[in-house]
Image (cartoon, rainbow, N blue to C red):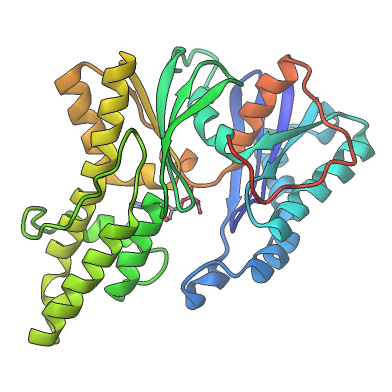
Length: 338
Ligand code: KG4
């Protein structure tokens, strides 16, 4: 029996989870409302909140899992990428925990963990995991990538954004409309009430499987600026249609390249991961492509879309099986590829 404690603290969510033999026992996430009034994550405040949250969150994760800390085989923690001060809290906790219990530490790449979230089993009978190789669209506030997943630890980036991430496009455009932070979920909610074909925004023309979202953000900004000159109430009167049209444009950009990659690589098993995978329009687009092109799709549970320690623990589980442990003098890294 292998029991992994996962720790995630890369950005503004403090999370701890327990996974036993690949099956989820608990996944506790403490968010940080302190950033809302600043319109974005404030790194120093994030690390302080992690320090306050980490022990209660781990305590709850063990309690919900119904296990004692002596039953844990290893502690897996996010080493990067992320905010350095935030990562330091999780890394330091993992060091203290592993040394006190004399158990190994496993370092986890946060992006790889988002992809492997699809392997978390809800119970021992759960067999709904992807088969290798598959494609994963990883879309979050910091990343937009098409990843070819060849095995648990072999992943190749086929395409990625050359500027903004999809989540940033949602958030920045939402900010221009005065919808608060993070704007992605608000755009999603308002888009359900609007007409997605009402407005058209420019789509990038770049080669291969790469993405670009900065042009969309600029064209959205200029469009609003011109309309607001004619009618100061333009955003308020049209926000549902604006959100629906913006969301459709972002989804079309994402799906066009994903389709191209799937076609060229002749892969029919396709997954989505990361914060933006919570978007209802993107989920519907996956269903649509599944019907139209016979894709076998993998859409994560909502709890595994945003940053969470369950994905860290499952990645740790597979590394444990391979005997991939790290040294106690490991330091976090802010930037790293998959
Ligand atoms: O993976 P994640 O939790 O962490 C970061 O990369 O920071 O992703 C957060 C991103 C934010 O940009 C947020 O606006 C976006 O995911 N997001 C959404 C939705 N839920 C979260 N975007 C669109 N629709 C949603 N329902």
